[in-house]
Image (cartoon, rainbow, N blue to C red; front, side):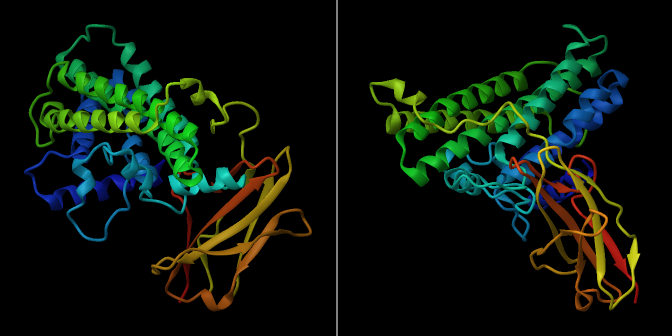
Length: 375
């Protein structure tokens, strides 16, 4: 999960560039996790579950991170109270996370992707929220110390923030399917899902107002952010009302007819990848990448994605084919392997049932391998 944690310093830096006049989510989360860690070992599991949530949401759901300071979404913690705005978000890491627009296009075309899909991100966020809530429950209704009670209240808000975006991931896909196909049933599905999303934000506002406040420090508190969250609640409610006026016919049975539903059962496991990356390589020679890829359903595709560590270009792509030993391999061309630079790469895999992933695993480390090229 270190890959997504690297986004948090960026969020904090962008927040700082805005000035301290408006409380922001990144600094609240950073302060809440710091205080919860200091409150005692009872909340270690909750802190571990909460730490990657904001970076994951930023990677998958935020408007594209701008190159300049003054990021407007840091003060819009719903990442767009209007569903149409949220559904256009491309996230901070579109290389590894499928956008909502891409998801709708894939579903209509009945194609596949190795990227993290919105429904996979939704399941992950709900699971993290569940881990936080389970850890908080062990404290009982009256935590032994005020610091624990305050930290538990903060973590409860972070869990609800995860559940809000978990539901909106699905809502945004339904909405983009409606826009792409003009199917009223998808708009109805988006509206009903957005009602559930609004309920979670309502719970978040109530949770932010409850519980004791932590001791003062330089991070914003729940109460500092509460006025902005209440204003977002008003806008989210107005958005739901607008959707209801657009979509809801007298016969609501249409909502059950021919809509997209995330797949919740069956084989969802991607191929297994075994790979050891070289720490360094000589300049002017092809950089060979070898990986053993296996899956009970059969391997459909293996691709190498690579770029220079100093470049701003997109990742280039090479097919990886099985060699004599059964391992898949591809070589970065020698002309690309320049001395004094770095090569960044990751491996895309897909099985015959359409389950895909990127390797290295985003949940375990950085999103790519880095190879230093000798001068």
